Length: 346
Image (tube, rainbow, N blue to C red; front, side):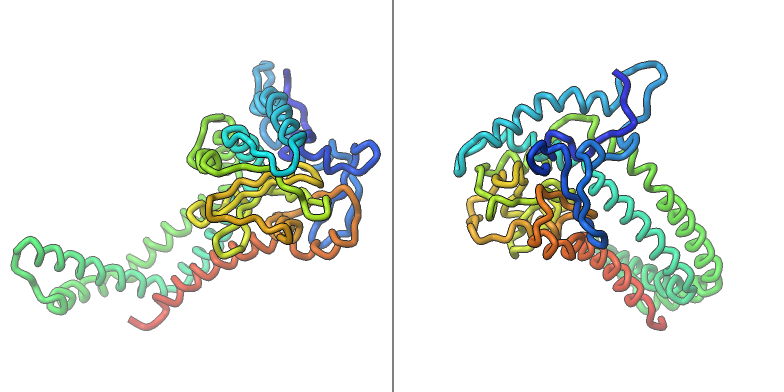
């Protein structure tokens, strides 16, 4: 079977219960800076050749392989949907469904690509500052000398004064500092160009991971949770483009595929507007008043889907992307900290 051009990263069998009545062939799409629109499900959550191009030889593609396993996956998801509220779900089944659907996301691929672009841009800004590069080199050399002297002292060899050794080494370093700065800049620009090409590499790496179809530590983490079907608040759950999100110990939420598992207390995936699939640790207590839709909107990267153009959806629409904005800000803060660390005169 040849792969078609329109390939879904949000499968239609996942979207359909969230479709607009009566036929559920269309679905409401909410984006951060656009008016809500009703679109055919067959055109939502998809991109042309997202997974693979058509093989001229007719050999099965990644999209074909994913399609083949979706029949069984769709059946398992329907069985979960049919369970009554408070029913337990086998952890192996829940983990398989959640992991498969979250790892495929364009949301996940976009975040990785954006991270590569951000690193490339920031690195370029840092190495354009000769003083910053020089101070970084001086600081690192001093650290290495101190480490070497500490090791020498510990193994019983005669210790040379740190300051004396620096007085010997630093004048020679000063003579060649301009060359060292130039070499560092060349290497950094090379890395920057490499990262600029990261979207293509990330696409290939993402496809390889999806096509592996083998359990990973992230899937095994899901298998260790307790799983249950819970009622969605007001029976009007939305479907975020990240599919599932984690609730952390501090009460915040993050898209599951980029969450810190060590801080994760629960993972929630909506399976229909009225039902949530919830995996939780023993310390987690599910609160009936928990604002699922607000958390889901924050965890969404570009959009969320809903069965109606409800005013409540309009109120949470501005929250789209808040979680990923925090992650991006943390990355910028890390680089700003690195810049500040070496900005002072040596």
